[in-house]
Length: 292
Image (cartoon, rainbow, N blue to C red; front, side):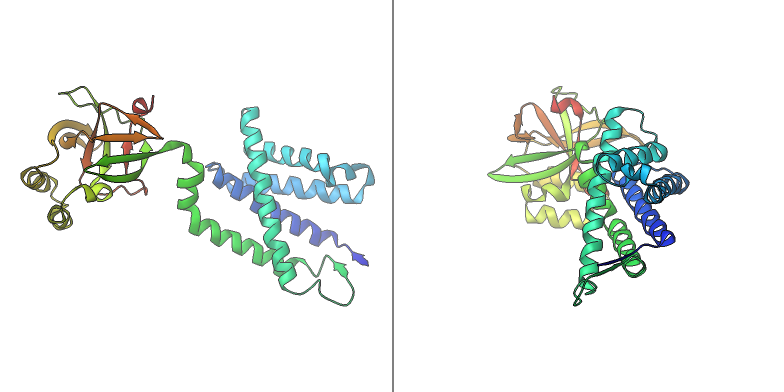
């Protein structure tokens, strides 16, 4: 087995991979740090690694516990986490990202057939450029395409809850945002009010009402009046509300037969109907007080 190591290539490969790992980690942790900080962290990690390869006394940092300590130092330089808990989060997510990137890189390496020769030659100069560029491009495109999904399902998962509305023998699952700014209450009953977008709960209404919504959804007042006139099975009524950009408004609400939040049935909770859709990919809003 022939092993050829080129210091400049090792440094370049490690720098690019470290930069990619730290960049993806920053995105997953929703940390809008500058590229300069990521650059400095990557420079530190790749420099120490290359120095450790040259000086045997520092080889401790090339693997095992030493490698973990080096990565922790790189996290400190890049993100400056204020608590141990935050440091551990960065460390765990960074390692998961590193394993994912390493897996893709090795898959691409095998796919090129570089290891399927009559004898194995490990040449650092043969591995890097094509595989490095392909891996970086793959993850860059993946993160860009999946950024919204990552934000909703990983970063902000704790900010959402699952809600099930049961009415008229119909069961509708909803994905709701836990909105700390939503403390809406029904002034008549004193109930807290969760808010659902009409398209998410449209099956509770007749086809006629659904058709009218998609025809007149831009005219909220007109749609509400139509629903009040046509809907006879739900006890609908208006409550006043205020929000950013709308100091005074009316919200159409009703009390569902069963409202289940995170598997727990909640009583005395009304459901408001938002005449539109939420842009964040969720179906409605629920206040933290409802969850307690």
